[in-house]
Image (cartoon, rainbow, N blue to C red; front, side):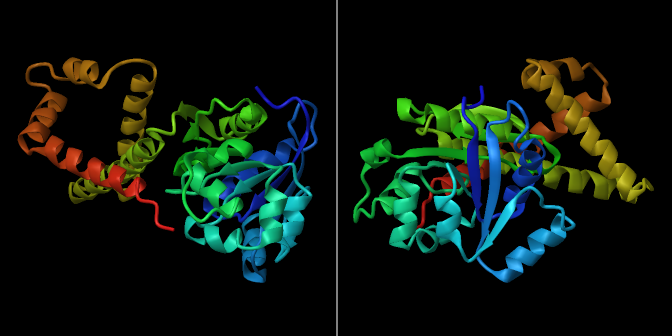
Length: 292
């Protein structure tokens, strides 16, 4: 469900994921039933401005670009997407005028390893963390994945019981549904889900790399090997998304003498499960580490 009123949206920073979101949002600006009437992008320097223009081939209409005018871009907005590097959160929110401008805005944060309570603490300029400090602000925490660029993101959106954030959540849902699937998760396991997502991306790319390297050694062209392996993974993923469990798939693929069955057996014998469990735990622990 989209918000019932049209909102002016500012991208505060616009890196790789931010640019992908901008590409998805721009075509719908000011169209009927669109929740977004205007888009603004606030960039920190001329170099970032030039890079963004280049990546869009100069076709950024109808977005308005602001260079070194972050506060002005936020003041003109109803909603703000935090799309800058997470390690810059204190720098970006350092100005008192910026913090004041943000207090009555919808804030959608895609900053990794940065809890919404910490963002609220910075905006409210509190010296110590306070779990309830976000209650008077409309902050939605979201975490899209690299698939955003091809509209295949698995975006996490933090659940909230605050009725003041209903419109904020609806806007976040509308934006991220345009680039993939949305999964609502509680803040209790938001970081764990982020780490799991990151590890899934790492595992997939590493697996395709290893598979394609061996395939090339057998004479298969590299681009063909990567495409075949990727499509196989996509097919298995689609089956699991449709409701078939990994255990069911493994059972159906493990007929006596089958190639896939033999491969599954070798993977189990190699203690791969133990390695994967250790690696995904490390990714989850890393996702939980907020470093101010």
